[in-house]
View 1: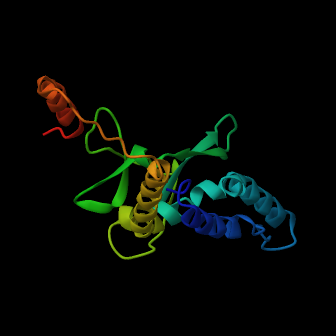
View 2: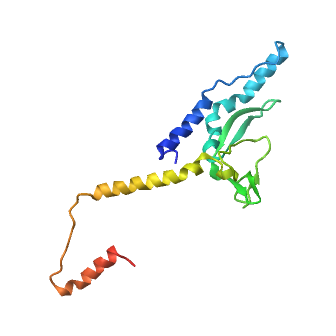
View 3: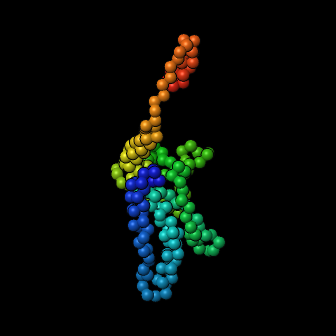
Length: 189
């Protein structure tokens, strides 16, 4: 829908880019070396979030966004090295827990719980209701369908408009079988 419905795509892009364009920074608590070092470590940990903020903000349209944290585990202190965006179809909810996201698996039809400290989950409520219906996409869907199908209908009409009407006549009653075949082809039951 973001690719085909230009107004919707433009609105989402404007909202996302307004946040992505902000300068994100961490201020040290003090002037001492410990505060400076802590600030550097926090900025290092937040770097993947800054780099993937556009994907995190996908929640504006869909109501939620999940990114898996790729950790650097070679040192004593584990640090986030990057984020991997999870496509929304990899996630599901359960009827009894409509606000909790689960990871789809081949082995568990109810999905597996998202591992703690492994995912960044961003949820947005553009309207009240269930999590998966909280984004702007659900509200824009009707207008998209109306305009998308209306445009296709107009294109079909414009393609056929002005073409001469084709009319055929049968001189021989023996050709009735051919007429029935044509009628079945154009008006199947």
